[in-house]
Image 1: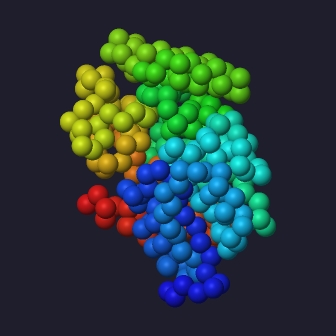
Image 2: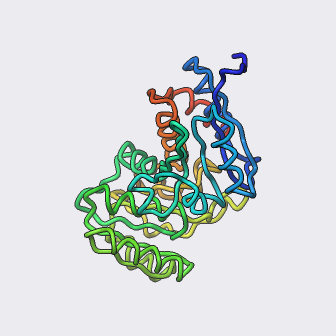
Length: 284
């Protein structure tokens, strides 16, 4: 497709962005749908200046926002949708009539991945390992957008974990428990949940031989989701699958958050099959 003076653009804002798979995924989707759109990667340090530039240039439709700007971008926006406001972080900006609106499709993408993967949520307690940005998005989505019976968060960073729990208790009407991510705490909590969501970097390439959950804690009725998608099947997922657990790859969350971004920017159903094929080809 030719790029002309009428071509509109989207992009990813972050630092670094060289590793991002988003340009390949979204450009393939734009091409499949015959849209006069292009997706670019922008390594951004001066975030405020960059977003002022977006307002000045025109023709922008929206952006993915990644580390380290997911929280810092909020003061520069005209509006933030309620879930993203509760989370305190965005990963998506939509540009409409010169205004910038923030969303968090990490949260909704994770929920879609869990539900499509068959996780039992309503009426059950969920265990999240980790308390960083992704864990925060997923925790708020679960606590405010589902019928789970309770939520337990185990994380290493005590201050970060306690802040997340405090914020959740202010917004959610379900029991919230937390503690350090230790073997004793895992032994205490894993037997009492039907869904475990891993949100730490443990097991991510190149340290693919690591997992923070002992194999003897897995049982067939447990669903295990790992948000790490490189490698596609982490050691955690391999061991959970071998024990008979239902498993959900981080690739599903990544795909779903990208699908939702596409739909926010274009107001059209995303060609999820094309986006999946591009994503899977990178981890074949």
